[in-house]
Length: 216
Figure 1 (cartoon, rainbow, N blue to C red):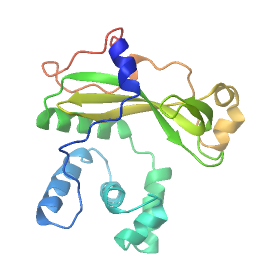
Figure 2: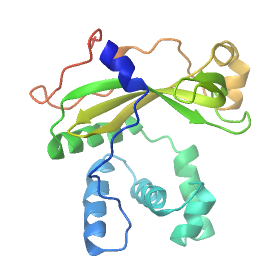
Figure 3: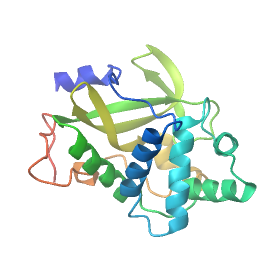
């Protein structure tokens, strides 16, 4: 468990990861192959197109990754921006399948050594985001207005890749059904079962779980 605690306060090492700029044929080929696999489980072509547009926007838009800024960066029409906003905020697509495809992709291109659970602190302004509250952030050594998540990472040589995550709700959010309903957060649990996390797809390539954890 001590190794896990150390990881919580260590910045992920991304040395050697080649950034995507979208400005070369090689970038376009890598991007197309990736989105074709990862988003192939989405049932509608419109969803797959919106997913590809959103991912491209996140990778290439500088600064804040809002729908409007992504739309401006990609030159999307007002109709396309509306579809993109609906896909991100309201469309009832199952992200579990997408995350599983990401795990399969990583298993194919990386030598996965272990799974790692670690907290993720997301600084926020205001109080409109789901689960936002004031909490002590160890890596900053101060109290911040933030969301807190628990991430599941696959640890490979020299890097860690996030493959699943859960948002941690503070007590006031768990107890206030009206507040959750207002923010369209209809399910709340104070306990995350290990069996709820996505798993690598093949038994033979499954890395060991961190000490003290098991899959139900």
